Length: 196
Image (tube, rainbow, N blue to C red; front, side, top):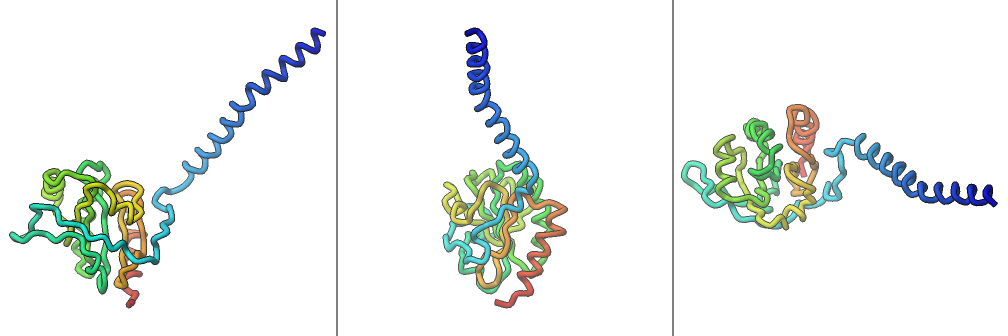
């Protein structure tokens, strides 16, 4: 009888431990899969599709040579290669990438356009005053709805829109020295070579 109780007790102990073992295995698999990938490589369903057609108002009070910087008008994508950067003054990586975007904007073959995400206008203007304004247009997305249409996971994110108005590339995360000299410029050059 005691042997039967001992066997039954061991079986119950194993059944109690089974969910913990299964959880540990699943957690290990998730950690391995998430930790081994490059988050900037998450594919976007929008690649090859037209850029969202949502107009966004300009950042109030942002001027260049006394003229208000325009907001986001999707009609301006046609015929141009545009680099669209989703940013915010409260975004720490956005501070790191800002000088690189200013440098990128010196390439007059492209337009660098900003989408200011869930930000306060005064803070956004101070941010651009601190680093310089790389943007030919800055659209304000106060509630994040337009960014959802762009498929934004979080700021910063950068898109290349080809002359045909279609999204050609998406970079998740900040622009860095490594990716600006590698994938970003490569994709910009591809978009510039494409005639339609």
